[in-house]
Each structure stands twice: as C-alpha cells, then as structure tokens.
Image (cartoon, rainbow, N blue to C red):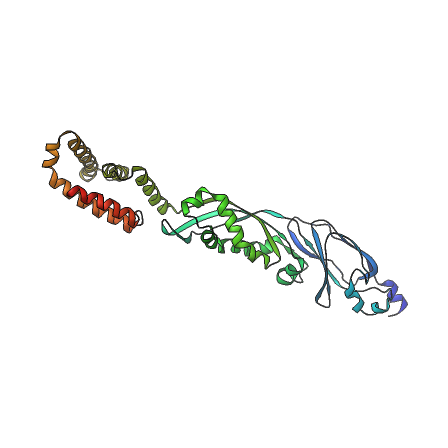
Length: 341
C-alpha cells in the first residue's frame, strides 16, 4: 500500500452506539472501508453488550465500560496481521452492539381455544392472554442463533417466535402447576409463575432471559362456560333432589319463553309456555303434598316412581356431557333409588 493511499484511509478511534430506536435489539457498526485504529476505544453503555467478530468467528464479548483496543484487552488481535510484532497499524473487524435492557409489555394470547387435560372436567378448551418481559442475556448466543450478520435486528423480527413459545408451553404450565381449571382461574399469579418456569428454558436457548409473565384473563369457550355454570348451580343445591328439579325447570323456562317470543306464538307457543308452567306446578305440588298430606303423597307413588326414572335418565345425560362426575352420578342415583324402596 502506498503512503498516499494509507493516509487517505479512514480510521475509527471510537466505537459506540446510541440506540436509534426503541425496538432495536442488535446493530452492526458501519465499517465500510474504515478500519479500527490500534489503541482506539470501545464504549459500551449500561444496558448494552458488544461482540467482536474476526474472520467470521466471535472473538470477544464486552459488557458495559470503556476499553482500549489493544492486544491486552482483545487477545485475539495478536493473531491479526503484524499485531504479533506490536506494529501500531489499523485492523478491520466486525463489531455488533446489543441492547440488553428489559423489553416489557410484550403481549401473548390464544387466538383459538387450546385443549388441556383437567382433573375436574376432563378435556377442556380454554382461552388465555397476558403480558411478558424479556431481555438479551447472552449476546454471543443471540448473535449466533438469532440475529446473525444483519445490519439491524428488531423486536418485530422476533415477536412471532416468542409468542409461539409462550402458547406452546401453556399445557406444560397447567401440568406442572397440578391445579384444576377452577383453581387456575382463581389463582392467576400461580399460573403465570408456572408458565414462566415452563417457557424460560426455550428463551435461554436463544440467548434470552424471560424476566416475568403476567396472566390477565383465563376463560372457557361460551358453550363450556354454560356447562360450568350449571355445575356450579348444582353444587350450590347439593343433594336435595327436589331443589335440583326446581333448578332444572327454572333453567328451562327462559329458553322456552325466548322461543315463544321469537315466533313461537299461537297454539304451539302457548303450549310451550303452559308446559313450562305445568312442569313447575307439578314440582311444587308434589313438594307440598309430600310435606303437608302424606295420604296424597301415597296416592301419587306411581307418579313419583315415573319421576325418579325420568330423573335417572336426566342424570345419565348430564354425566355423559361431563356436567356430573361418576361419583356425583352414583351418589344421586343411590339417593333416588332409596326413594323407591
């Protein structure tokens, strides 16, 4: 190289990065035809890391601080041309800066219900959403596994992958927590903790640290929520079968009335309305007869038998739909059969 061409070359004395945007995770220092001056300084600010790349390989990683670039601070430089003889000549290497500050308020959520195994309800499809926060914890791993040689790598480039990791581990989180759905819904902090523990290893493989996870809501699809509401209502009633019959009849009346209001008028609609009223009246009459007049109750023994059999069929249907457990069904069946003895 001639003296004139050497003088015309541009040398870099200070390498530093002031983040140019809120979403940049990795940024390559623009070298072009410039070379780093021996003894130049590298400034790495708090919440940053810098990685030197020599001949395609990671030479060193620097945390926050100011460094003089010499063979003492960067031993790999001794392998560069003429540096083993301590010639004070420039060198060229790729330098990448990484933002290591925490990235908060990242959103995750189920676009479609996901199926989990629940100890109370069996297979359950649930929806959930919340926030999470992460940071780059290992700049070398993040460079080699994720950002690579791009001039700039942003949060948007990574967002879809991280959302997928969160959703992928929801079932694992439920299994690790050992809690039923009702307990998860009532203790969202424990569920969020379990989700963080289940997902953190996948983040670590990318050079990231999952700092926190929050759960804002967990719910069932509408059709399953209705079944849950019925089960809760039955739980409040207990083993009182008279109250259970009243509850079932009361639940059916709004549906029948809605059918009448939406075009079920005329004789058919009136019959539906009268049928609901008659059903309720029969239940109340039987309750009063059994409580106030034992003689009338005896005369209605055949009707009572038919009612018990009908109720057994109803309970069997509820068990098949998952509203009643095997134990609940057996208990109510035993109670009903006692009434026939």
